Each structure stands twice: as structure tokens, then as C-alpha cells.
Length: 167
Image (tube, rainbow, N blue to C red; front, top):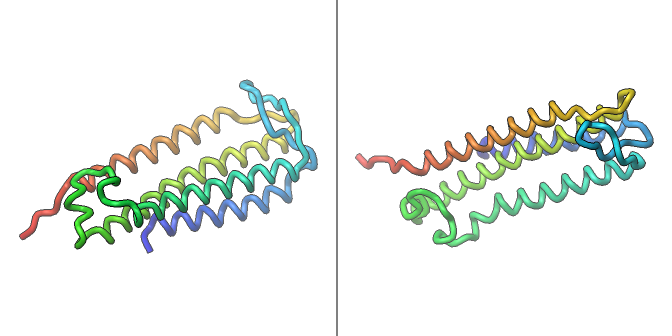
């Protein structure tokens, strides 16, 4: 099993564990939305707040599974990558598809972590008085996740741009 799939499974487990942990420390009524200054502007019962988190997690998992599996069924002509004819030749297709699928798992693991961080920040905002969402931390999470995914994409494209020399 490639690193991307292991990372994805660990992140998924972490998200489920955190869902349970945060439920147990959350107040009965929670701020579910915050304005630009980080002040709450919509309150909901705890069950509604966490049902939104569960729905978000399920949608993200569904999309990520499609992204991980789609390379197995797409014809080579629909996969846009450097040196496609070389990397998707019958002798290398399985390994290439495995790499692409693992990349998708890793990328969605990073996205799931960013989404989980947003929920964590929301819950912790509800645990303080006055309730205030830490937008600076959310900004850092967003920049970090975009940067990591960007570097991953550059690395992936670079790895497929080189054709190994045959000796």
C-alpha cells in the first residue's frame, strides 16, 4: 500500500476520532457561522452542528474515493500528464495508475485535514467567552494546505516529465 493511502486512512481515522472527542466537549448550543471579524452570527443545536460536519466528511470521502478510483477506468487519452504514451503503456499502466491513485489519496488527506482544522477552530471558538473564531489560524491552515498541495502537484508533474533511460 502506498504512502498516500496510508496517510488518507490515518487522516480519516483522526477525523472520526476528533468528531467524537469534540462532540463530548461542545456546548449544547453552538455558533455555526461567523462574520468577517470572527464574531458568531448564527447559532444551532450541537446535533445540527455535528450533522453538518458528518455530512461534509461523507461528501469529501465520496469525492476522494471517486478521485482515487477514476484512473483505473479512464482511457489513457483522457488522462492529461507528461509523457502519457510512455507512462500509460500497457507495461507501466498499473504502476502509473497506482501512483496517481495514491497521489489523489494523499491530496484528499491534506484537504480533509484542512476541513477538520476548520471544524476544530469552530468548536474551540464555542468553548471560549466571548465566542470568537480565530480567522488568523484558519488563514494559516488554508495557505499551508494550498502550498502543500501545490508542491505535491509540481512534484508529481516533474516525476512524470522524466522518462528513465533504458540501459
